[in-house]
Length: 110
Image (cartoon, rainbow, N blue to C red; front, side, top):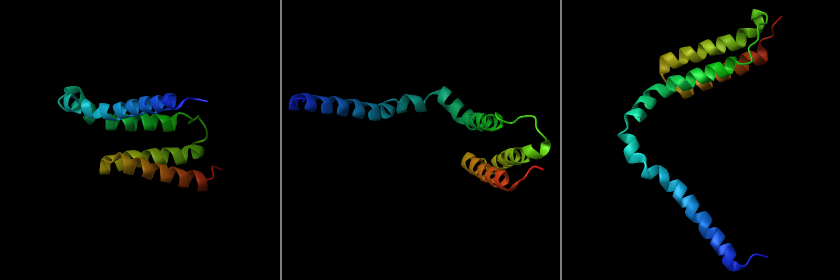
């Protein structure tokens, strides 16, 4: 059975590590705000994330009859269209996902 001193030390170490890890981002926030790399990434990452999501969606797409690919192709076109119209990644991802789920559920490739 651990001693009370051992338990107190374990709690103290855990507390210090947790507090430090939570405080660390605030300590480096100032230099990051002045960084040109951070500004570049803030401008480019939304497009990069959308590209990664689109490629991830298409990873399982196999050459099959075109009727089987309709839900994926339509949802991908919807994602691109929604993103170009709204410039909001959340709306485009959620809208295209909902459309893909609906089409996958009700579209029967014959």
